[in-house]
Image (cartoon, rainbow, N blue to C red; front, top):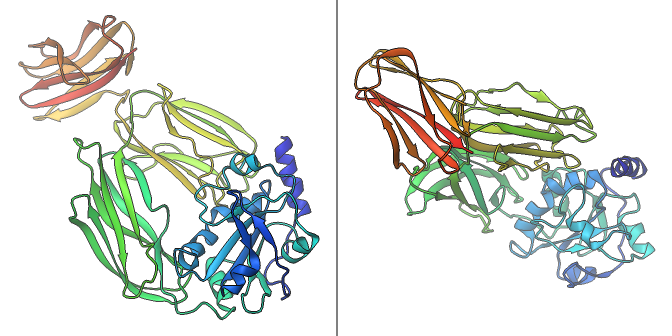
Length: 478
């Protein structure tokens, strides 16, 4: 509660002015970043680079929200040293009492993770620095023009398209074409057997783009899908793209797809992403969800649900209470590929709370409270507690296990059989036959008890088969 009240108090004390600030010639400064590298403001300006000085504090929730929007990261990719090299960003912690360790570990998360531009945590700052770059508190995103050395705007509240317009006011950046795929250059995505190849493309250049070509290529170099996108994309705008389905064979541990964008005059090589698809974890038993919500859960309409492979919700939409603690354990009714989804309308996740979704073995399926506007995790549920039934040649066969999925000493098999020649077989997880019960009697409600107390701990499969089909159930021997 102490940290929470501190953050609320700080937000009240540091209400910041939005929009433009008065133009003024800024003083020079020389600071060492957290890696020990020296940076001279005037040196960057003398190189004809626009300089963005972003002043933040690790305890500032508004600073964190803006930081996670990645606006500066997108700009740096296009106009920074690996792009057109026309812009530099300096990310400066303005609270002189902040320890270096707090940059990496605090209630919001790691401020340094995936940040490509230099980060500073100075022990001291001159009054001239405070007056020029953070006189109204934090966050402040100063835009400095190289030729005039004037601070022309505080752009922290602007969207990306407006910031692109502002940096062009310095008259050193223009006629830049660049599309980039949002997210990391390398992504790992757990799926069951198939998934849509979905991604977002952002225009970070100064010019609008009328059309571009996108393609997905598999690990063998074959084109999975390709499409010509015809849509006007203005600077700062993004578009969602779906290139169709990617299939991951059960026999493969993982497979890769390379997503690529091609335009006629794209000047920056940030338009590719490699996605590694891996099999989603299997869940055999009950799930447990534990949530500690933050102060803004109600205001931000933070909520969660679970949906099946068809996108239908199999749980209700569960709204979170502010500063609440929630724990629930539950089974799912059918074997399927499911996705846990949590959504926050404000878009800052639940950084001062916690989320933990685990299976009954303690394996973590989802634990990211810093999920932005939407977090999700897929898993394959193979421990359905309901009877497995199927129409085989017009007759309904049934196979059920008691206990349903977790067994210690004895396993009771309940089944319905409509014809002779039906058998039940017990296999281990490698498919080795352990026990077989042939020629089951015809009965619509029959039981078979198996002593399993000598079996090693692990996953086992019960299979009922005849020439007309097969039903299977899995269980865990504890």
